[in-house]
Every structure is written in C-alpha cells, then in structure tokens.
Length: 237
Image 1 (cartoon, helix red, strand yellow):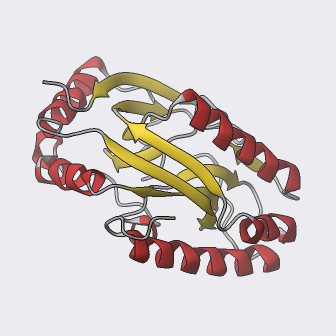
Image 2 (cartoon, helix red, strand yellow):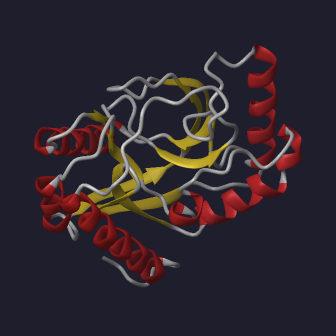
C-alpha cells in the first residue's frame, strides 16, 4: 500500500490493533453478539453512506459470504445491495420509516454540507473487526475527513450531533465496510479469526467515490434491510 497517503500509517496501526484484539476475542468466544435494534438505540438509524460501485459491492459481498460460511454461530452477512461505508450516522434507530418532513430536513442538511465537496479515492485493504462485526478496512484520501468535519459543523440543521454509538471511539476516523455481524450468542469463531489473519494485507481494490446516499435500515437477524432515500453527487457545480 502507498504509505504516503495522509493518515495511512495511523489507520494501518489502528486496524492492526483492532484485528489483534478482535481475533483474540473470536478465538475465545468473548466478542459481542447482538440482536436487531429497538427504537431509540443508537445503531442502525438514518445515515449518510458512501455509495460503492457494483464491482466493489459484489467483491465485498463475496467476502461476507465467505465469512458467513466459516462462522459457527448465527450471523448477519451483508449482501451486495447492503454493503456500504458510513460517512456519518444522523440519528438513532426509529423502528418506523422516516416521515417525509424528516427526510427533507436531512437531505437539506446534507446538501448544505456538500457545497464545495470533491470526489475522493478510497483504497480497501485487508480485514479486521471489533465488537460484533467483521469488516473490510478502508483508507480514504483526506477529502473524507474534510467532509465529516463539515457535516459536524452543520449539525444544528438537524437538531444535534446524531447518535453516539458504543463503538464510536473505536471506529472514529476509519472508513470500514461491515461484512458480517455476529447475532444472538457469541461462541468461539477460530475459523473467522484465521481468515482475518490470512487476509490482513489483501488488496481489495480502489474506489473513486463520487456519490453519497442517505439511507435508513430495517434490520433483521439475518439481513441489514438498507433503504436508499436520496443520492448526492460530489463535485456538482
């Protein structure tokens, strides 16, 4: 990988540390396992996402299926229609679809934050994980950090900072694509841990990011249930 990219050494170190900690937890069955959210919980709410191209989405979904086949416990594996990278979580899980008024409010907030924002590159390399999730590691160019900062500055347009995930400090500043979530009850997953080690330096390809998506979710035990609400083009005059 090109270590000259801004922030890359720190991200490499962060992902490596997460991989080691998560791998140990998988081997002993001390990782987290979760159930679908209830209304008011931070995860799975409306979010602004990176829209991945067909080739990348299919490639990551194939990796998710590979993880699923190795897993001993119950899991949610992301399909090509659901795999994504979160730019910013905008609100917690509601349990019901967003009203049209709230959709309009969120879309206006994103549009205001994207003024002057440029497309950017994203390199996917290796697998890691944490909490209840296996993910592919993304290394974005600096434009993503600038965009996240702008979204944070404009947060009052939607009434606050958005939900604080229990994993916020762990995943902050990353650009990871979740592949699989452990469900129900955690048990030892040595085969999944071995796969993380085997693929830790695997080049998963590059993505030119020119579109973002506002989406909400209706997750089940086995599916993410992502619903795309609006698409935004970066670099639009």
